[in-house]
Length: 257
Image 1 (cartoon, rainbow, N blue to C red):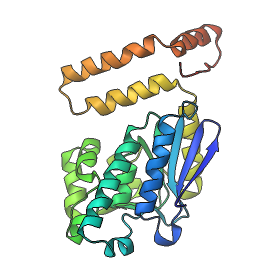
Image 2: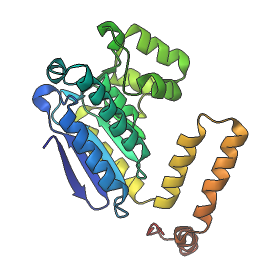
Image 3: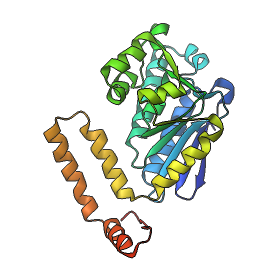
Image 4: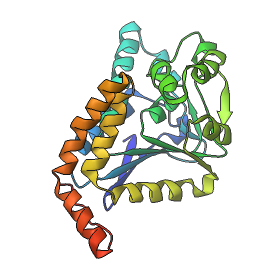
């Protein structure tokens, strides 16, 4: 087992179990990640996910180079297919996913975090896409997701120089929403996930789809997409529950219907 899953109510915590190899990406890990994505996608009681790495050294330090060294050309191509599938599946989950970046997130490790919806980073962590210094380019979505997150100029500066940044700078750049001391990271990520789990799941899912689907569209097309995704919220029981709770001055209890 390379990925542990712990359930606490409506929140799951997914932890990469490869501390000795700095939680690097292996074919086995990608397979387990994809299996849990497929399970989670159909779990209506699951409202939010926290993804992190075991130990303090690394969130995920990229591909396992020892495993890669044993691969032929077909093996490397298969690894990249599995990586794209796993990261695409993570990004497509209906639940919001919080990356708790507890340590180094380099190469494919940062690309893994970029496929999550929200990122919290330890102040002591180091993140970056060092691939051009190794004679390759980011191959797990880094050249596409990073510009969409930071803008082209900042993404080019990080990718083309292979520069690594600390947690505080990652937050300043917009790579993460918050930088906190490592000792507080797990609790902060759990609190954020629990807050998400109490919100209306249909609305969260539709908002996520509107943002992800509209970011590359012309404004008018994006507005039309938003309108289409807004309608199911109007027709949901959760919307009526929110109105009733507001009138009664109590917290709403959302059933996801």
